[in-house]
Every structure is written in structure tokens, then in C-alpha cells.
Image (cartoon, rainbow, N blue to C red; front, side):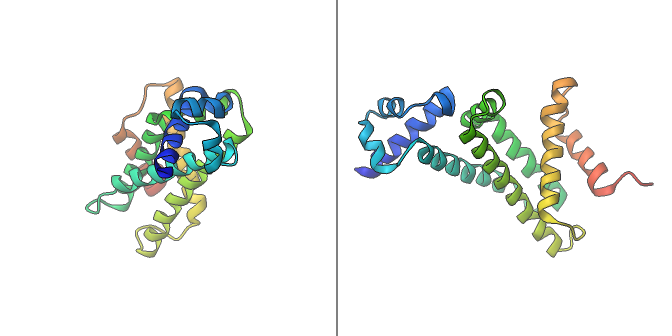
Length: 190
């Protein structure tokens, strides 16, 4: 029975964080949504931060699974890298909790949210860096710093998808792939 209660609490807290954000979510709200006593929550979690961390950790696992599912063994490393990055950012754009976190990060700058957003970004960078290490070992790409390369790839992708769209016509998946190929893999040199 306790596993079901814990699951109810996680689902209720995820719903509350997704709707109201971290700062505006209270343990009373979570208890009400989960239809459990507030004390029941404290049998599983010491505080709101601990509950929030578990939810974000679960979301990171889900996001990494989505990225892994985007990989097609029939495609080249660069094509798969593009698919993986695109899927990670789609997840970020579509997942209700992720949307709320990034909104709260920008508007309110809640310390716990800033910390979790950083943890999400670090998880993405680590995930991409692992793929880059494999590509280096298989001689698909030149030797490079996998973490720095992953960081640059992620930031370039975010810039092309999020920042570019604020001021210009959005680029489609193929255009982004071509830009990556041009700037990162082929280079601008003649």
C-alpha cells in the first residue's frame, strides 16, 4: 500500500509543480491532490526540496530514454546526434513540468529551481558527452573534449531553436541539421 501512496504523492506533486511552479506549490496542496494526509508525505520525503528532486530525477531519466529512442543504428553519428538533440529540446518544449521550471527560472529565479534546471542541463550535457566519447572511440569524429563539445552543441541547438525563433522565422529540423553539418562537421573553410 505504501508504494501506491508514494506513487500518488509523486503524481500529485508533479501535477502541482507543473501547474503552479515550485515556489507556489505547498505540501498541503500536494496532500490534497494526492488525497493523503500531509503527514503521509513526510513518511516518504523530509521536505518539499527532496520531493522535487526525486521528480526532476525521474524526469531526467524519462528525457534520456526519449533521446535514446531517437537514435537509429542505420544512420550516421551526425544524423543521430541531430535527432538526439532535437528530441531532447522537443521534450523540454513539450513536457509540462519542464516548461514550468524554465518559466520559473526566468521569471522568479527561485534558488531550488535554478539548481534543478542546472542539474537538467548537466544531465543533458553528460548524456551527449557519452555519445561523443563513443563516436571518438569509433573514429567517427576527431578527438575532442566530449564535455565541452556537448556543451557547445547543446547551446548552439538551444540558440537555433529558442533564440532564433524569437526574432526570425523558425528553422525546420532539416535546416538545423544542415547548419550543424556546415558549422560543426564540415566547417566554413574552402
